[in-house]
Length: 501
Image (cartoon, rainbow, N blue to C red; front, side):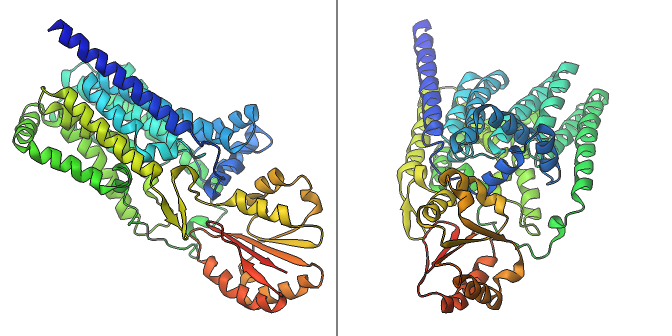
């Protein structure tokens, strides 16, 4: 028996090591290969001001929470601002998420469930994806994992009547870190605290310590948000009716959880159906015995309610995206692992290998099966969101003193790659315009006619992502044709680049 236990432990830790190594490799590989895209350029803008205070105020005035951007600011001051360097904090947060979810789940449940959730998290495409992007989501996921794990600890402590102030202090700290990394953390924390209050009332525990911690969390985060909103109020971006309303419900958050492929979910459902009797008995007994302290109840609750809020708000907002719900991804994996590895104590190793084999198979499909974007095939490691670097390099390689680079959009969006690829940027003729009237057919046609008298070539350069102006620009370029001997739209992903000569 001891030999069997020793062998099982050995396999457990070998598999854990393999999963960690794979998780590190897939997150590190190609980290700096792709161009930054518009959201990463925002991160660059927020974090590259001359002073710490300047960076803080810049971010503060844009209604963005501070933690990630100030970390990125300090990181870039120390190591520079290449794509690799900018994405490295997200990579570190991604690796930390794998480690933290293993140890926290092992503490709250057991090491088998911990290994199951670690496999799902380490090999998850969505967790991989945001571990390679210079945005707050990987750090947001890390803090949310700690917050959820601490919340589970508190539920267990309340249930056993031994809740201590240090538990609530830890929860308060990581709740605030989660909220100040991304404001959607407020949704997570609100529903967690609501559950704790309901649970405490139902089992007749004292609410005073919990009430004090809740007031601290909401007062601090609420005060900060109100101050930030007041500073932001001079701008009208939140109320601007010209901003396109983009229906993104088809980008369902659950599609991202299940490896971008519902076949993954289907196989898990089939596995559960094949064990339906045992699972039904397990769930019935679990809920009957543990009631509100059952992980089946509280994990399902903290997954479903934020998704409902998201789906309601998504109907009226163009700013929501499933990535804002990244905090439910590890929790969903925790629930899946809990069900699969709890309904029968036997065959735990077999079930672990089922989770590992399934996850590795669909990760391989995600990484290495080509996908088409604008009639070009890409695999994960070379698939761009936006070819900002490639398009800028094309311009700097081909433009000269007799060329004009006509940028439609804020110039600071474009500065990073112009400075990177062209040592003589100041010698190039660059004009930046961000006036809606400029891209009207008549206006743009007149501008091209005027500039063609002075320059042999004109490069018209603008962003083309989730933007209704793209259609307007295409129509306007038809009128510009009259001023060019030849005009050609270059094929770059989510970038408008026209070359006129």
